Length: 116
Length: 116
Image 1 (cartoon, rainbow over the protein chains, first blue to last red):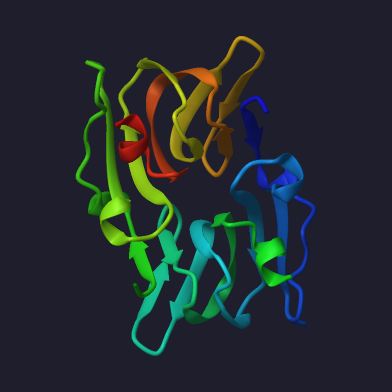
Image 2: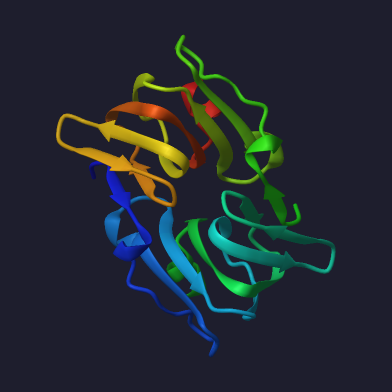
């Protein structure tokens, strides 16, 4: 594969599996392309809430808005240009604020395969 | 490891190995932390130029400014909020523009180990 460039508009944003809120994700690189990581974009509506146990190592870059991620042991909030790292195995709650959020993410391994 | 949040100010930016230009990189997560990916931030001065053959799969998110990446087969330019994926094995030239650039990156595997 050659180098590639992506914007959020290149991602087909779909509701994240297993949740009913206004949280959407779309991969631009994943298991279909033969590499080791999945790359994608996410969009969170205002005041949304998503709890999950991480099946992959997920690096999330906040592009717009703010997100707060909590575990039993820690709470962090990131705004534009900041990064939140969520290691495999952590039980996290991701919460958006009034302004919603847009993210880019990189997961290892591929999250759609890890979910089964 | 628990969840963690990082800003560019958390990275100790050092001149990239093997080059003399105004290009600096600093890991915030890497082989020292036991996970599979390296996460870091980069800073490019104006009109810099870096050529290398990728030893890892590198996902670069442009946070400020613009970067142009070229191979024999393709040239892409990304601005804030856009992502450039550089697969392992590609020979790339990364070029900054007048305004320089700030990036976040995720590599698999760890780039410092892959370089040897």
